[in-house]
Image 1: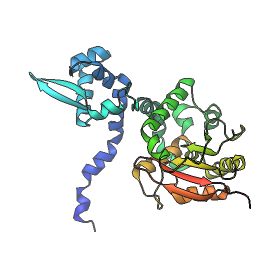
Image 2: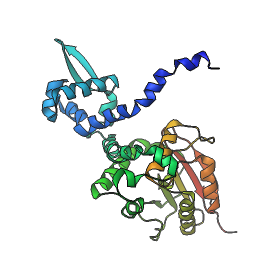
Image 3: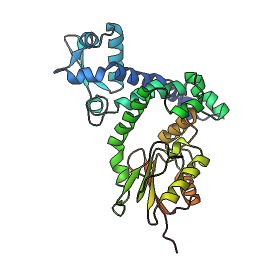
Image 4: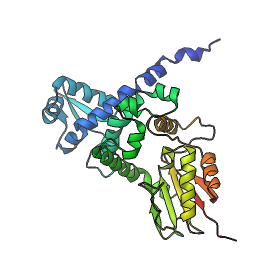
Length: 303
């Protein structure tokens, strides 16, 4: 039998089913430059003024601005029967392109690449593999050879990662005392084949979640071999709860790995197993106030 609480779910269902519309409002406002125009203006602007500066339709602009107000991305005051819009503290900090904490490029990457892959989530679940062929008409093996569809997409993603770390980086790097490690190497590029540079500590920031366990084991084994005794590896990833049922953001990231890569997000225990299998010891894990956790593991001195 259903309980009385089961009858109170339509609003939650609406929230879930309309979520893609909300993200598209955010993406469209970023792409059009709404937050930048309002940041540059010396005073709040009416919708006609915003439309004129953006070169957009009056009706569409007003609808978009009012929806951004409902989402608390903009605020509005009414004077003489007309609405005048300005940025909120949130949009000023994270959505204006010139802000040092802007997430503009990452949001554009999500709009132009990630969103298109998510349209094929059901098929990704059926097949257990990414959906680049259906989203872009390009086989995934060709994409992974070139990594990105274009140089523009590569630059957009790299700038987006820099934006993410401008907000998240401090907390994960402060999770452990890294002062014993004098030479640090933030790994990127073709780390499966290229010689690894000498370092006391290798940093893998949002790397392992791109790959299946076999590839992760291969990379970690290479790092262990290159690592000096007493050196280590710092893994920075969004961490699942041990039962895999949260946090929601990390679960969504894991589904994103399904539709875009060959990897997944993992729990601390799963990362410990991968690191131990590669020969690392003293594996320590810390969650941070942000989205990402930190896992530090070391290579023992020989007996």
